[in-house]
View 1 (cartoon, rainbow, N blue to C red):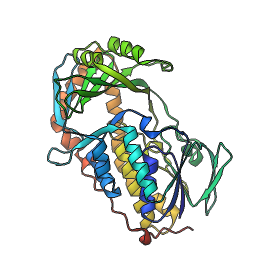
View 2: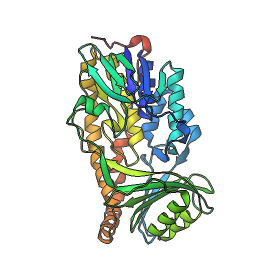
View 3: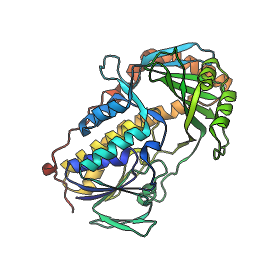
View 4: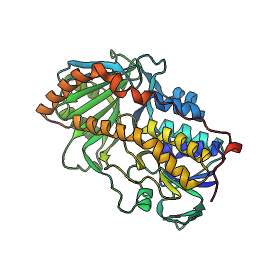
Length: 391
C-alpha cells in the first residue's frame, strides 16, 4: 500500500518505520529543510515509549544517545522537598526512562525509516488534500502532488492535515506559558534525577545528565503572549535570572553555557475527529498531551496504527479500529496534562495549593499513573503478512 506521511519530526519517521515493516511503500514529507540534530531541546521518554521503540527495533540506538533517569523530585520555591518518586516508570520496573535531545531521537528514527526503505523528502509543505473512495491526493506549496491510498497527518499541534479532515477542528492557541531551555556546567548535583521547582513565576526543571552537566527548562507564566524573536543568549539568561530568583534555579542559570531553544507552549481543545476514510492523525496532530509523554504517545501511535492496518481488511475500518483502541488511553492522559499545565501558572496562592496537593498525592503516584507504564505495545506482522486492502 502506498502511504504519504506529512511531518518528519518524531511521529512521522516512527509511522514510516512501522508501516514499512508491514509492507507499505511510505514517503515522508517534511516542511523544514534543516539538519535534524539542530532542532529542539531536551525531553524525556517514558518506559512505555521505550518498549514501543524496542518493538520498532530502535531501542539500543536511542539508549546510546540518551541518559537514563532514575527518579523525579518536586520542590517548593523555598527548596522544600514535596515528593520523590520513580521517573516515568513503576518503582519495580528495571527499565529507566531516558532524557535526550529531540534532534537525536528524530535522527535515529529517520535513519531507521530510511534503512527500512521509506523515503523522506524535506522542504515540501502541505497545503491541501483531496480524498476519494480509493485514494487521497496531497498537494504541496511547490505545486507537487502525491497520490496514495493512505495519508497520515504527523504534522504536530499546528497540523494542516487536521483541518483537511475536519474544517471545524479546534486550532492550537497560546497556553499562557512560554519556555526557554539551556545547558549548564555545575558540579555537586546528583545525576540521573529529574527535578521540578514550583517558583514565583512558573516552574523550573533541571536534570543532571552526568557529574557536571545540567539540562534545564524555565517555564514562565505570562497571560499575554510575548514576542520571543531576536532574543540572544545573554538577554535570555538575564531574563530567566530575574524571573527565577529562587536559590537552585538562580545557581543553575548562573552556570549556563548555552541556550538551546525557546518558544511558546501551546494547547488545543480535544480533537473529536482523528480520521476520515483515508486520512488519519497521529501524535500531537491528534492529541497534544505534553507533560513528558508526547514523544512516547507518538511512538505508541505508530505501532497501534500499523497493527490496525495489518489486521483489518480495509483502510476505513482500520482507521476506525485505531481510533477506538487509542482514544480511551489518550483521554485519561489529556486530563493529566491539563492539570500539570495549570500547576505551573504563577501566583502565591496557587503555589501553596500545588505544594499541598503534591504532598498529598505523590505517595499514591503509582496508583494514579501506573496505567501509563503498564502499556504493552503490539507486535507487528512481517511485511508479507499485511492484510490491509486497497479498497
